[in-house]
Amino acid sequence: MSGFWLGVAAYGIWGLFPLYWKLVEHVPALQIISHRIAWSFATLAIVGAARFRRDALSKLDRRTLAIYAIAAVLISINWFLYVYAVNTGFVLETSLGYFITPLVNVLLGVMVLRERLRPLQWVAVALAAAGVLQLTFGYGSLPWIAIGLALSFGSYGLVKKKAPLDSLAGLTLETGVVVAPAVAYLLIANANGHGSFGHSGPTTDLLLIGGGPVTVVPLLLFASAVRRITLTTVGLLQYIAPTIQFFLGVFLYGEPFAGTRLVGFVIVWTACVLFSVDGLRARSRAPQVGAMSS
Image 1 (cartoon, rainbow, N blue to C red):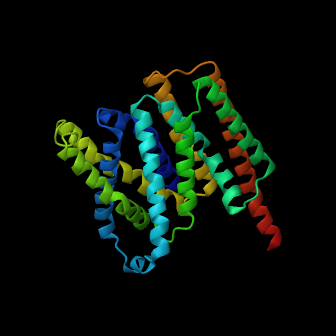
Image 2: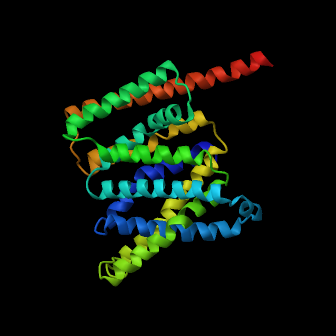
Image 3: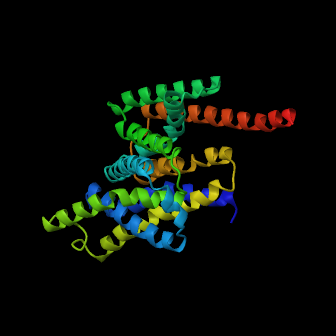
């Protein structure tokens, strides 16, 4: 399979995630995330055992462990917010969060890495901010779920820029950092009679276990895709997931979408289009510069 279709598959699965997590909406969000961490770690450990490389162990110093510990906390927050949002009727907010994530990435690059934005990127960031303000009026409050998703995933990406391990080893280490507290929480919840696993039927149990492979598969597809396609293509493909989530929220789950909310989303979509156009223009100019210098 080509890198393009691997990327489409990865983002397509991420876009369809609300359909899966809605099946366990009767389970508390914190338990779902704890199961997701535990079974993801188990899945990654099995996959990683077949691809184990001893040289990865030589990179496990304090700095590396600190990087992945921070990444683990950030991705856990992101997963919790996402599942909480889906199972409490805020699928549209998850869509908004992942629409503005690329723009948050750019803004974090400016604030933390001292990167410089091109003029059209500044316009896109300003439009996205205006769209969020418009949606604040539309929702009657700040869309904190969307902002939380964008900030947590954007910060996660920023931390991972310093990560020395490959994607599989890194993700295994990340989940390994938080698997102990996740399992401890599940054991305590079960001991107190609040645990859902083993008490809500075999279908629920299988769905919670399946959360591990469901999480890992698109990550592995994505890791394979980014090695075969350009970052520009990745940047365009990343809008597949929030677009699918948007249609699910509006047409399947019937979440309110009209008036000021529509205006806010249109502003954000415009920002995304400008951001993508700027990326394509920058990419098209890069080979010309290289040719001139050679």
